Image 1 (cartoon, helix red, strand yellow):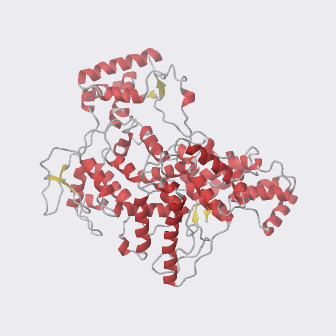
Image 2 (cartoon, rainbow, N blue to C red):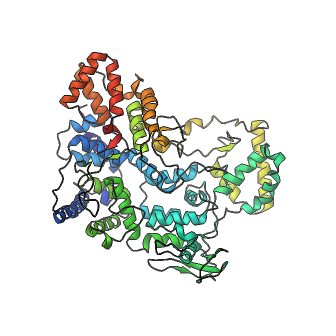
Image 3 (cartoon, one colour):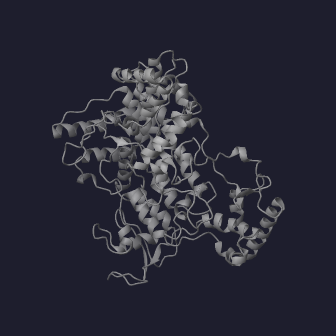
Length: 637
């Protein structure tokens, strides 16, 4: 218990610095840059207070800061050891050191993965499709682990094409996830990356915005022409095997691997740059079925003539979104990160862009936009600056804004934990630090009939590369016959997965009830799961999560996970914090620090010691139950 966060951080930074000493520090790794940027933000907030003639809030105490920073930065409460390390430190720089420690931890990318999965609607599969999006899911997670800059991340998604199993092109899952719905995909792209709500313009001129239907279709021309790579070479074979009497055969199951899990996850073309207006087009600026070229509706104009056949529309769109829309791309990204850290966007909703000049605090927004550009769209560095501001450290305030124009930064608003924050915090209490558990890995085994085959001989990455290289119907049929023969030989006529255990221990997969981070569980969680009950997004719409309370949540806490895995589980990690404690008071103090990240007040200590005297050992379980189901645990201050 004597080792400080300083020591942990020093070891972490020392190991990270090996081999990189000669490289100049990135902005987020430069303490002087972070401090200067944080002061600039605080200066604008202070100026707002002076203008409104309001007192500046106090800075919160260590315990609230500790819990708030853990939940915001890595999405879970601290372990008992982490809480004690911080609370017992006597170092004026310990808050800065804590932020550095958290932003370099595996928990940061896990927390960001939950955010990205919700924003991008990342799912493991979809109804009516026999493939899965495991490679795309893994691409998103890996990009966040490697801290890919947001502009590069966006470009990789919007300009994607190629093999869905190739790690270099697996970002095509962004489009194949919405195959058959290219207009919806485009509307979501504009909402996610530019804060432009254009979905209404798919069918008619937007009566509440500036987008006309013709504008929307000109934009859609950039992504027109999405289709699987070379799937036409298998079409006849697939039709033959799709006859009703053959759908239960091994032949059909093997063909389905090629049809859905290879071709179905690939993306051909590069964006036609031209599109036909729909047959129900109703305005004078175009005729039904007319071929029109691609054109951007705002920002620096980008056009592709309807007579051009050069393609590259998706690449042109990606470059326009990230570099030719003025401050809009940077502003939306900055505002999303501000909301993640501060609890509320500078402008709301965060997916409806507002120009800085139209805000009540334009100087602040301009500073945030410049900061996003200065850190080269490094979201971790940007959030690190925000975490180091005094504004982030203001005391919590349950009262609504005192200013008619909106948020006056008068302290963090109380918000209920997200489903993922709650789940990750509960498993921390049950099992200890969840970031020490190996993260879910890419399962690239070939599944036939829901069982792995050819394990150790061939995987989906290899299979996909080979299949997509086939250049004729004959080559596809010959390959299929060989593939089928290999599977039949191994399984004795059924897909039993003869060598299935050879590589099993190298693949980390977690079921619905596994005590691991929400980012490692199936996406989305099933309806009976605690994550779903507490509002995790079903990943059907952008930002689909909810924090609204309901009766089912209360019943779940009272009769479900909390009682089974925490209250009545003597092996739960939180009870290990009691080891070595010799008095009731010390045991109670340790439970408070473990669950609420703070010691009890004298009044609370009196209540709890009375409970232990009255109920004996059961009293400690009652304390656990009361604290975990308290508003203080369930809310972020």
